[in-house]
Length: 443
Image (cartoon, rainbow, N blue to C red; front, side, top):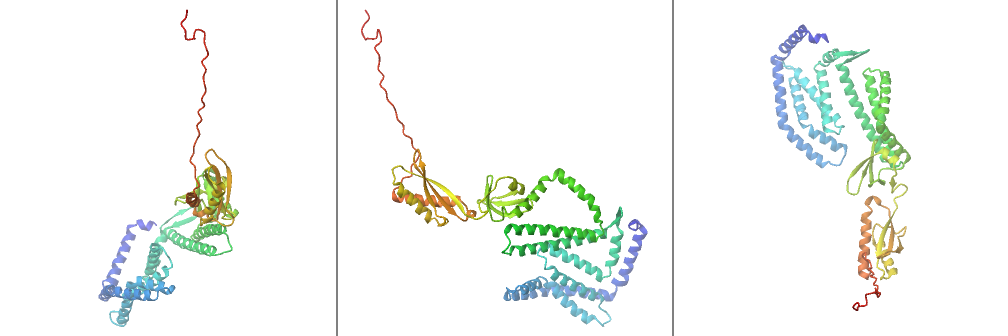
């Protein structure tokens, strides 16, 4: 690393670069080849749009054939380098054997082939920005290798570093570790997603088991990626014993809630008490479970609000699970009628209204009960059953009450409003004859 701060080293490298420019670049044959490469690029820019349109029409004609459509889409996107490669290949064939030679053109052809191959291989990555970054990185390495600069650059990067105990940390080690970790992490996440899709398609597993296995597989794959990437660059994994002890102290001091939520999430997934799709009520929150994570459960209410409830809350507080063993739910609807109406007819009309409501089940059968005699009305209660609480409860109550209203008005059944009877009690007050109060004059 001391060579980097030595002026003689920089002077020697500059002299080598100047000699290379004079002997390999500023040569008539090479300049002519460079001009041919630029001309091929300009011609390719003119021809590539027509080639892309042709491939696009072919893609529309053969649409729906899976991998064929994907290959044609990639051909359409790589129209410019493909056309440039074809023109450059013809130019290399014509230049070979002539006094000009074709060394630079051959290098250009090799780099274009590497770019096209890398682009097609990177098409497996769905993220467009990540795919472009991987392609540029791979092509840069390939180009340096073709130009014979890869080994010298590796030596230079390997000479820059610091020593930490018995481990020599260099720039090259960091780059290798970062690239390897990125590749392994991407592979781990891809394998985890593939396993989750396979588990999701299995009809024999419950939703909670699918989520549990999916989360565990992701943790295992990512852990393996980290360990393998660290071991590959020469990091001593025994040093993590100290780190593990420090991590335990940190968990004991400040991460109790995080760890509690993590283990509570695993417990919820194992005991099947709740699962994605269940309709639950926790405190003032009522909705259906959309997602179960390592730290929280996502519950979406009927108004579209998404509540993130910590797993520990679901373990330590009472939870109403309306679909734990089945989706059946009984709803109580109070209804009041006038004392003057035909009570038997009112009960029959309420039963008809319940039967006419689409979401109310025929079995178990709805029941209409006489609950009592109130201050202003005779109190009835309709008890109905539904099997889709996820679609809401208040709306089915509204449907039933609206039909009851229509039937009561049609048949003259009165729905009373609160009223009070006021009784005024009158009393006669006799005026007793008082001494000296006889109406006469005193004598």
